[in-house]
Amino acid sequence: MRHFVEELDYLRSRLLEMSALVEDSVYRSVLSLTERDPQQSQKVLQNEAEINHMEIEIDDLATRLLALQQPMATDLRFLTSAIKINNDLERMGDLAVNIVERALALSNEPLMKPTIDIPAMASRVQSMIRKSLDAFVKKDPELARNVLVSDDAVDALRDSIYEELIGYMERDPKTVRQGINLMFVARNLERLADHATNIAEDVLFLVEGVDVRHHAEARE
Amino acid sequence: MRHFVEELDYLRSRLLEMSALVEDSVYRSVLSLTERDPQQSQKVLQNEAEINHMEIEIDDLATRLLALQQPMATDLRFLTSAIKINNDLERMGDLAVNIVERALALSNEPLMKPTIDIPAMASRVQSMIRKSLDAFVKKDPELARNVLVSDDAVDALRDSIYEELIGYMERDPKTVRQGINLMFVARNLERLADHATNIAEDVLFLVEGVDVRHHAEARE
Image (cartoon, rainbow over all chains, first blue to last red; front, top):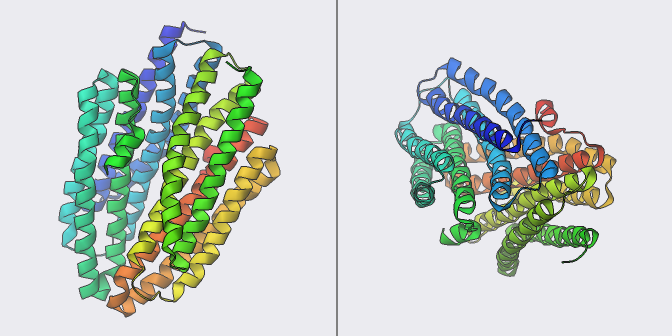
């Protein structure tokens, strides 16, 4: 067995590889909707299979390190945060697949106007994901706090997309099915933002030892 | 500090108290929709605050036991499963709140027919939740497998509710807003079933040491 410090470095690097795959999936899932490119969808599905394998590997490794060592405060927090971030990343891979499924359901019809706002929401969410993972790598609490603040803006964007879509559906029943698919895309983007928020909260716990979980919820 | 075995028992009993609160919340959230009883909604919100506190307490306790002890295989699996089940239960409390929010949005208008199917779906989901937690308490792999099988039936129910609601919305645009609220109720019930499935998978890992996570997903 490698030295404990080497094992921790390896765990960190695997988490970063996994997060790069997740970022790639989210980026491509939105392209699969806006560009209607089936190759993007295919790649998201491939990524998901790999993300699932990595989740199990990282979970096993973190659990083994918890068990075989008696990590002190900082390493202990790193390992429990790694288990949680791993879980968040795996779910983010699933959410990207959900978006692809909605994109495929929509691929045979012209899209209505609100897709203009969905890419705007997607780009904010992608920025939150990138910042939350940067905050983890750099142990940067300011970057993590920045993610917590962005979550409210994403929720507001989702609400305005919902309202706009409901307006379309009420005016023209032929748009109901498409409107619902687009609502679920917005919903999945919002949940991606929630997971980025979870990761930012884990970073704050890791760096400052402060548990901000339900303070953040109370803020909403 | 209490003896390790006593700490484990205490952790188990707190998890069971938390799961009882979650079951109560899910039950009341559906009543808040079907019976339009604001007291039920109120209780779900109170439960959520308590569930959030318990999540942090249980997480801290499990992490401390992992750190201060060097648990052997079975206890280690119990502690890592407890951390995951704790996380699932907390999210289930949030999902019950989501259902209550949809119920409140619908509370001023007569409900259309598909609510007949939503209680049917809800009762299956409640049964899955109960079985997954019973499987945890009794360390019963058969009960856990039973939960995994039920998940497909719940997904099928959700699909038929979606189709029925889309039909209503397409025929009568005045039902769009209500239809969407009811779709989100069905969506939240489906996610509750997913969390019960996660718990059942954790039980199988705990009892048999078999990781069934992504096999279960491949089955879908």
